[in-house]
Amino acid sequence: MKVEVLLFASLRDAVGRTIAVEVPEPATVTSLRRALEAAHPAIARFGTRAKLAVNEAWAGETDPVSPGDTVALLPPVAGG
Amino acid sequence: MTATGPPIPAGELSREELQRYSRHLIMPEVGLDGQKKLKAARVLCVGAGGLGSPLALYLAAAGVGTLGLVDFDAVDLSNLHRQILYGTKDVGRKKLESAAERLKDVNPNVKVVPHEVRLSSDNALDLFRDYDVIADGTDNFPTRYLVNDACVLLGKPNAWASIFRFEGQASVFWAAKGPCYRCLYQDPPPPGLVPSCAEGGVLGILPGLLGVIQATETIKLILGAGESLVGRLLLVDALGMSFRQLKVRKNPDCAVCGPNPTVTRLIDYEEFCGIPRVKEEEKREMGVPAITVQELKEKMDKGDALVLVDVREPHEIAISELPGSVKIPLGTLSSNVNKLSTADDIVVHCRTGARSARAVQFLMSAGFRKVWNLTGGIDRWAVEIDPTVPRY
Image 1: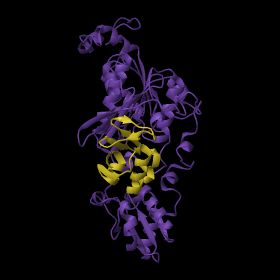
Image 2: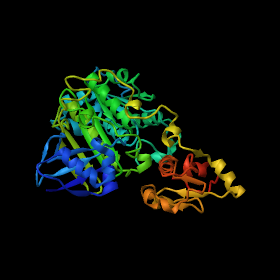
Image 3: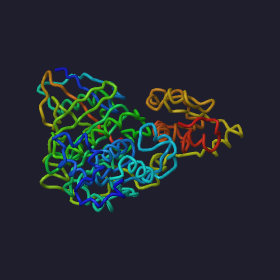
Image 4: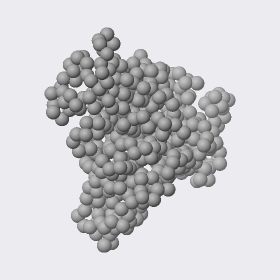
C-alpha cells in the first residue's frame, strides 16, 4: 500500500513537506520506517531518533499502519 | 508603591495589586483565590533567551510571585530579533542583570531570582527543588535531557517548548501524570544532525508564539484551571499557521520515569548526547585540520595557490563573501565534489566554522588530503582581517 507521511522540522527542510512510500501489507511502524529510510538518506540518518505518529497519536515501533492512516514523522528539535 | 504602603500579610494582595490584576480578578477562573495562588507560586525559567523572554515577561505581568531565571550569557545584537526581554542598550550586558531590571519594571511585586550559572548535573536538583513549576526554554539537547531528568527525579512539572526555524513543539512533561520527554525521545540525535538556531536560523516571532504557550500552561498549572498539555504534544507551524496535536503516552520502558528506571540520578548529559569533552570551538569544528584567518591572510598576501570554498547558502552569500571563492552549499557538496581537485590546497569556510568543519570531514572521507577548515569562518575574518565585510 502507498503511505503518505507528513514531515516536520529539519526533515521538512531536507526532504519536503510530505513523502509517499510503498509498504507491504500488513504494515507496522517499523516496516514503514524502513521504507522511509530507504527512500531518503536524510531520514535514514535519524533512524529511530525520529518518531512516527499515526492518526494523531505517538506510535510504538510495533503499532500497525493501515491504508488511509494519517502518518507524521517528527525529528527531535531543541531550539530555544 | 508597595514599598511605601503598609506591610502586606503573606498571600494577601495590596491595593495596588488588586488594581493591577483587576482583569484577572473579575474572571471566576482566576479570581482572588487564583491571583493569590499566582503570588505564592515559584516558577523557574531555564534559559532567558527566545522562549524565556516572552515566558518571563508574561509570568511577571501575571503576578507570579517568585520568578527564577537560569542563564549565564551576555546579550548579543543577534539576540534582539527574538529575545524581547532585552533592548539595544542591553547589548554586551549580562542577560540576567538586564532581565531582572526589565521584569521589575513590568511588575515590581515579583521577586526575580537570578541564577547566573550554567545548568549542570551538579546544580540542577538544588536549583529546581525550591520551585513549583520548571519551564524549559533551553537551546540544546544535553540540557533538555538534564532538565527532563531533574524534573522527573524531583516530581516537578516541566512546561516545555522547543523551536526549529518556522516550527515549534510544546507540552507539559510531568511524570506523575503523564509522559516525560524521554518517553517520547529515548535517545538524543548524534551531534550535528539537528541544526541549532545559530546554525539553521529561526523566525524571530516563533519563540514568542511558543514561549507564550509555555507561560499559559504554567499559569494553568498554578491555577489548576483548564486542561493542561500533559499527554499531548502541540505542533506549531508558523508558515502554514497550523496547530496540530498528538496524543503522547507514558513509555513503560522509559529509562527515567518507567517502573524500572536505569537513570536514578543525574548523569553526564554531554556524554549521553555523544559530545566529546573538548573546548567549545573544537567541539563545533570537530577537530578537523584548520587554518586561522591570519594564516589565510598571509597565504593570500604571499600569493599562495589555494582554492577557497564557501559552503554557505546563496542567501547568506548575498550578505557577504570572500572574493574568488567557489560557492558550494554544504547540502550540495556530495554532488559537486567533481568541481574540486585533490591536487589543490583547499580552504573551506562558512559563517562561523561549524558547517565548513563538516564539509572538511566529508572531503577527507572522499579522499582529499590538503583541505583545511577556516576557524571562526567569514565572521572571524570580518572581525580580525577585514571590517568592511558585513557580519550577520
